[in-house]
Amino acid sequence: MMRRPFHLFAPLLALLLSFGARAFDDTPLAIPAAQYLQSIRDGRDAGGQPAAALQQQAEQQARQKNWTAAIAGHETAIAVGADQTATWLALSQAWQAKGAESAKDDEEGRKRAQERARQAAWNAFQAARLPYERARALFRLGELYDRDKEPKKAIAAFREALELEDSPRIAKRYQELVDANAFQIKGVEVESDS
Image (tube, rainbow, N blue to C red; front, side, top):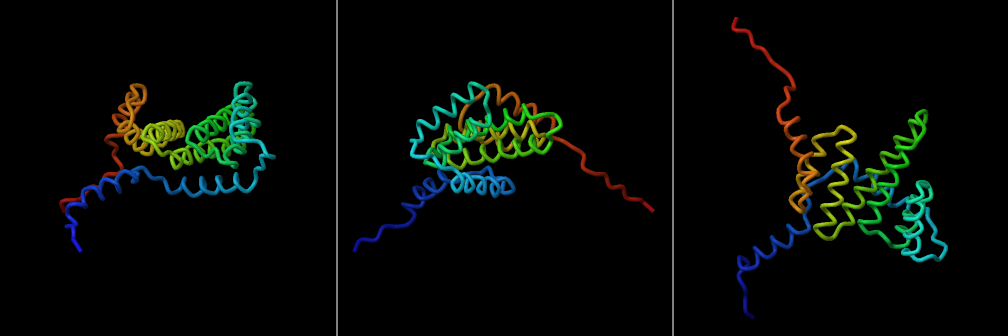
């Protein structure tokens, strides 16, 4: 039996493992996002409709700004197998739009819509298989973090996304965030000479 030295295969193995690795992580978001995905799988019935038809209906509802129906359509499409990045991103945008249109006195509904928008964006990131899909999901997450005034997370998401795909608008916002958050005094300690 011919033995091949491991050192010849190590670079290939490292390349394959790094391809699947993701530097960006948000565990506090990942857990509720997984729960959201499970609730979609458990709670939606397509009634025999194919995923493509459900997605078309959801897109039509979104064009009409019927966000509740658009959300239901995207969720049902996901439940029957349309678990692609684009579907999750459209769902995230529908949740954001629904939150923006929530009544001023419905703080709980607005907050839930914001959380669902983030969770859907995270699930888009998890569903991404190609670099451009990962980039789009990270751009979306970065924008949501930025909107919610979480600059460190926005910077991390934008940084990884910009490594995958160029976007002058995002690159400009990324640089603004880096410049604004590069140096912050967290506390000052003073020692006495006596």
